[in-house]
Amino acid sequence: MIKRLAQCIREYKKPTILTLLFIVGEAVIETVIPFITARLVDSIKAGVDMGQIVRTGLLLVGLAVLSLFCGGIAGVTSARASAGFAKNLRGDMYRGIQAYSFENIDKFSTSSLVTRLTTDVSYVQISFMMLIRIAIRAPLMLVFSICMAYYMGGALATTFVIVVPLLVFALIFLARKALPAFRAVFKKYDRLNESIEENVRAMRVVKGFSRENYEKQKFSAASEGLCKEFTYAERVAALQRPIMQFCVYFNMIFVLLVGSRMVITSHGTALDVGEISAMLTYGMQILMSLMMLSMIYVMLTMSAESAKRICEVLQETPVLTSPENAITEVKDGSVVFENVSFKYSRTAERDALGNIDLTIPSGATVGILGVTGSGKSTLVQLIPRLYDVTCGRVLVGGEDVRRYDLDTLRGAVAMVLQKNLLFSGTISENLRWGNEQATDEELAQACKLAQADDFIRTFPEGYETHIEQGGTNVSGGQKQRICIARALLKKPKILILDDSTSAVDTKTDALIRAGFAAYIPSTTKIIIAQRVASVQDADIILIMENGTIVARGTHDELLADCDIYREIYSQQMSGSAAGKEAAADEA
Image: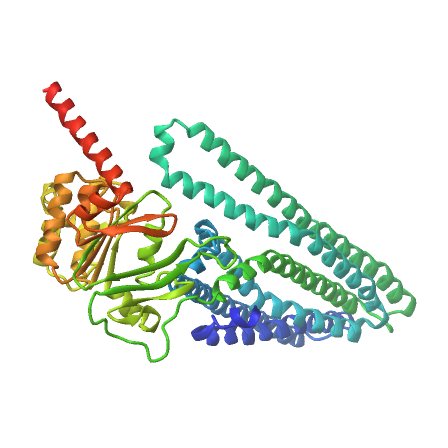
């Protein structure tokens, strides 16, 4: 884990090393100052000329300024190194997530990934800064101060033999108590973020069903649980301070009592006033170093779980990757399924798709009908290799999809989903996701074919109208048409519409399909729909049920031979006729 995290330092190695060097210099100077001060006190007591006092005083001032300089530079370089480390860490995680397949993403919830990219990275960043500053300074100060204390105080320094082990034992005990609590905290963070994200995304549903109070109670419960866990963890961690204070005061009392007695009984030969002063200073430095180490220990205890969660993301290997010597060109839009079976997990009891054999010529239009959960979306997700088949193979342009470069394959396939997503930005910026180099004329042409141009031009700013996050300031039908236009700009070999005209009326749906025939005649079009009218003109219509294709054929063939299709058609046509009749009566 440490090795993987260390790889994120990269270009910030220089400020990291500079921090370590300046911290060493600061630690050395701070342990030398008490030694010189003690000698000065003893010299004054012995009666020394003013010139030597001034020279020693100037030396101490110079050392203090140098220590301040080293500490200041170390602060600047450590801030640069830790901020850069966090930037690289966050960037590596984000790029790793972008390379994930759907199977990888299924292992992490969205809220958990957000927590790992934000809260967890912040904890690790703070720990890194403490490691390169305090974790170097504190041990050096501890070692140097103990050595100087024994050099100046002799047997009096044995007080540290009592105090240091006591403090170390107490800190280890507290850390063991705190670590499980901090582990629980981060799991509760995930649940809290999940509650927030779910509520914000479903705000219209929440308000539509007047469930605001229920959502508030759910959030309060998650927040209260997090508060309790954090309070316990922080309470345990906070005990280190009173223990530290006890050790500090014990050391001061011991040095003053025993040291004073030694000065009096030896008349200053074994120990003098200057040495007692130095011993008090070194004692404080030793205990402050231990306090710093305890702070690091607590922080590392807190961030250990964060580091583990971050490494889980960094070390997750994408299930789908481009092969060696990958094919970088898709010849045409033909699609073939050869005895394909698929399950979402190796441990799944049943297949999501089973024994699929299907041939789609390039340029053909294919309609797919079926009830919810019949496997329609799963089938089309295998074409751009969003998942890999469990058994059999899928061919695009005459080649197994597993032989293609992933970017090449997915660049040749455009998918428009029912739950379309628009990104915050202008309409033109969203459209250019399909083609970054598209001209304004090409944008307008694609939008006309998708029946989006008219409503876009009604906006005051037209194509430069700002889209809010998630496209909340446009209707569902408008969002779908913008997404269809975005897919058309890609000029794909295969266009997949996954129930993506469900929010538009039948007339607009028909106009969109007519636009496809005129604009992309050589593109293979696969249309998943709930309305028979959306697919009845297709070259072939598939009827799916329980992950299998139970019937296939043209509209007329299925009307004649397929009971399921005939029933769907009859229900929709009778419903449509009833609607027209009611509208006529109302008129």
